[in-house]
Image 1 (spheres, rainbow, N blue to C red):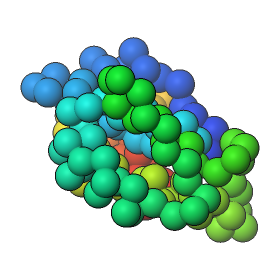
Image 2: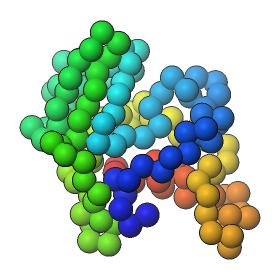
Image 3: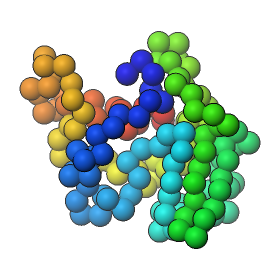
Image 4: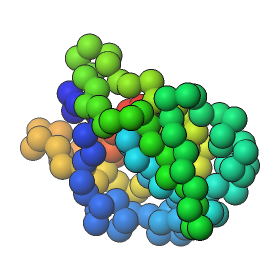
Length: 133
């Protein structure tokens, strides 16, 4: 949790919770965020995306959508010093309107003293998805 730009790799768990269309939406962003054409349209189209990103965010189009790169190189960030890279925040703000947050339970493995409470577990999952907001 100290280095928020490291990705928590629980894709299987994330995807089991994204029924009812959630699998079609982004769950979070990171150094590289890939959006398919349907999500580009949900965000208002390519020009709307271009207008909402800063110079430190690179947008590359391909036939199926876009790849958004937050900065030239990946960065760890450091929660202890508030050092979340601004480019990461920019991409998080971009996808926030369409980000899937409809989880019914938490999917991030927590320490035992926290993992037995469903509300705490769900809250920690949502905090992780929103960490760059």
